[in-house]
Image 1: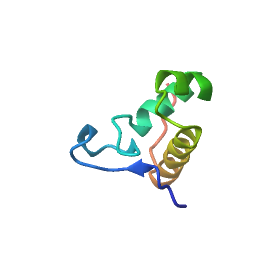
Image 2 (image 1 turned 90 degrees about the vertical axis):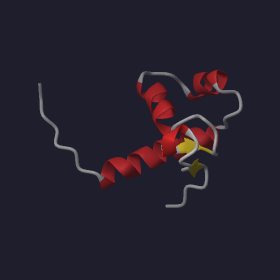
Image 3 (image 1 turned 135 degrees about the vertical axis):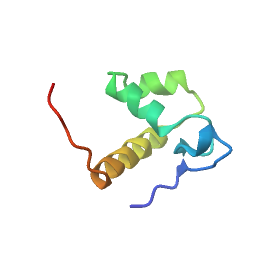
Length: 75
């Protein structure tokens, strides 16, 4: 998988995965989508983003979730 829009820079957001070097983290995008926001709403919040940025953020998050096993404990 090649994700060209996800960047890591220790000087930007503490090195968290960001979108194209901007101060918008993958976590922010994934959180907005997970809370029910549409792609169009996210793009309205961050007009300098592109649809492909959102897709890559979701793809990166899915890849990371598959790579790291986190034990699930039901409440």
